[in-house]
Image (cartoon, rainbow, N blue to C red; front, side):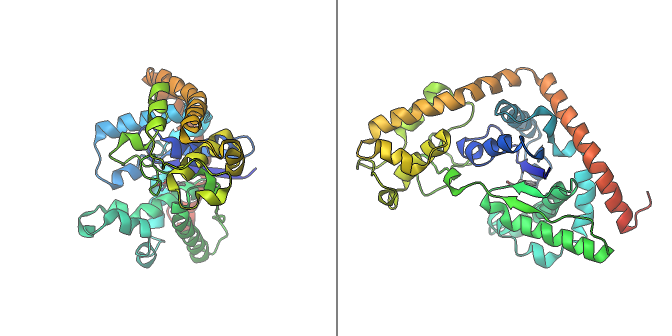
Length: 329
Ligand code: TRP
């Protein structure tokens, strides 16, 4: 069985884009892969943070992932497993400044004020490589914005193997979800649905109530034309395309199939059907998330068990990596 590793930043309650683009696939992968899913709280320190918020958001994300069907024995928070930090340091010393200077995500996040960002933001990709390779994971489900980081992880693994004269770290392959699962803002069909969008109307989060979901879909931006019957008719209509994409992804049908049902109709009936579908799929997750959040002791013990399991896999691998670089053990 292939080992799968993925990480998610614990920025609180995930939104529909996170669910369709990542979480739902993770839940499916568990059936035939040896999976580990990590709340990457160490990565959260790479941008300004508040301790209280980080704590709450880690618990919120954990509750949501469990509610969405992630196996409790496979979920943990990164900082509880020291293998990440230990291998991360070794990789800081294997990775090259020239490689990190090419990372587009660093350039985007640091923006103009580069000098004032943390060193952690700069070496973030080295830690991400360590996250995966500490488990000898070979399959990594990520969005296409993370592909450059996985290439870097493979470069680090290859350089480590070459410099130490071993075949120790395996090659990593990304598992990118189908493009259909890219969910855009409900206010602007050209922007990705995002946690940082100032408008809460732009996104559906996994704890929204049935009324909130229906209201957000009703108010979602559209145009004045009826829905087309063919995919080509969506080309210049980003908002219409987004709603059709969401309907298709949630119902696990193709967008063409959705258009064959709703083509020629106005947005009124389509939005009603979409709201109903979303409520049916998401409301149980929201209810379960709220229930889990009421018992913090239980959530903490679930994460602790996950961390123990993660340690039992990663510690021997990182012990071996430490011996290979010449550390006395
Ligand atoms: N960088 C990833 C993101 O922002 C999160 C992440 C950290 C990750 N470590 C990882 C994803 C390891 C996959 C594997 O989405």
